[in-house]
Image 1 (cartoon, rainbow, N blue to C red):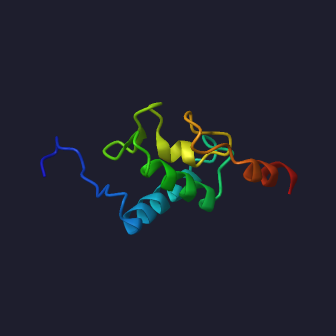
Image 2 (image 1 turned 45 degrees about the horizontal axis):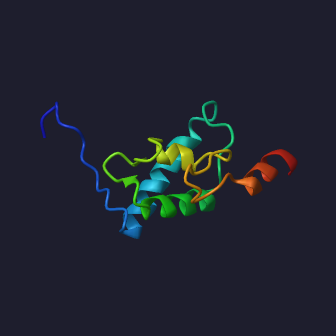
Amino acid sequence: MSEDSELEYNTDFTDPVVLREFTLEFHKSVISFDEELEEKSSWDVMQSRMNICTACEHFNPDKVECDECGCNLMMKAATIYEDCPIDKWGWDSEGWYKEYFE
């Protein structure tokens, strides 16, 4: 592979193993950015959101983005306060409750 070429990833998110590995690696990277992402959703919420997104007609597997809103799905799915602009999933009220009241 040349220096100028982009890295290629297996982005077949219809494969549950690929989706799980990709999501797990991203979740690990999010944990290291506490100052940028203060209110993180739980692993279960993030995985549920990504399952919904990867099945959506607006999912762009090459960029792991939403073609409808243009968001970075991994960051959006990992944040308590985020929601889907076309109402496929909402903000993580349970995560918010745990963050501030437990």
